[in-house]
Length: 209
Ligand code: GAR
Image (cartoon, rainbow, N blue to C red):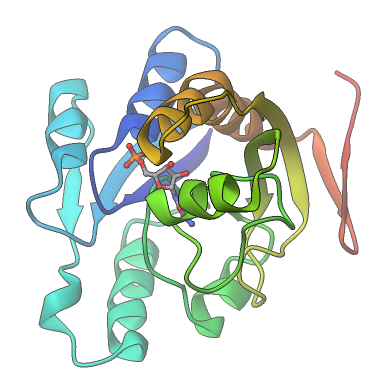
C-alpha cells in the first residue's frame, strides 16, 4: 500500500474526487493516510473528516516565510511516513527541499493544458481568466509530477475541454473540473500506486498492466 497524503488549501472538490474513486476501489494499492491543509478553515478538512481520513493543519499564516512553512509541511509528511504526496488545489509553491525529498513522488493537478497558462501566478480562477482572454477554443487539465520549475514537471495525464461561447471564468472552471480534473487526478494516483509510471527524464511512460 502506498501511504498517500493529499495537500489542500480550499474547497477540496479534487480531494472529493480522489475520495470517491478510492472508496469505490478504483485506486488499488493506495492508503489515503492524511489530508494536510494550509488553511484551518478549508472545507476540504470537512470532506476528509466525513471520509474518516485524518486531517492536519499546517497554517501558512503562522510561518514568517515560505522556507519555514515548507519545512513544517515536510516535517509533517515525514512524521506520517508519507510515500506519495498529491497537491489537490494546494495554492503554494513547494520549496526545493520537499521537491528533492519527494522527487517524482509529488503529483499536482493544474487546471490548464501545460505549458499553456502555467507557471508562477497561474492558479485557480486566474488560469481560466487567462484562457478566456487569450481566446483559446480548447483548454483542459494536466496531472504532473512536481519539479523545481513551477508547473513544468513531467506530465502524467492531460485531458482537453472545449471552451464555449459565453463562458465566464467560473463556468469554464467548473467544466474543466468536471470533465478533466476530477477524472485524471484519481487516474494518475491509481497509475502511480500500481507501479505503472516510469519517469524517463522529462517523459512519463505509462506501462501496460
Ligand atoms: C482546482 O481547479 C485546481 O486545479 C486548482 O485550484 C482548484 C482547486 O479546487 N489548482 C491550481 O490552480 C494549482 N496551480 P478544489 O479545492 O475544489 O480542488
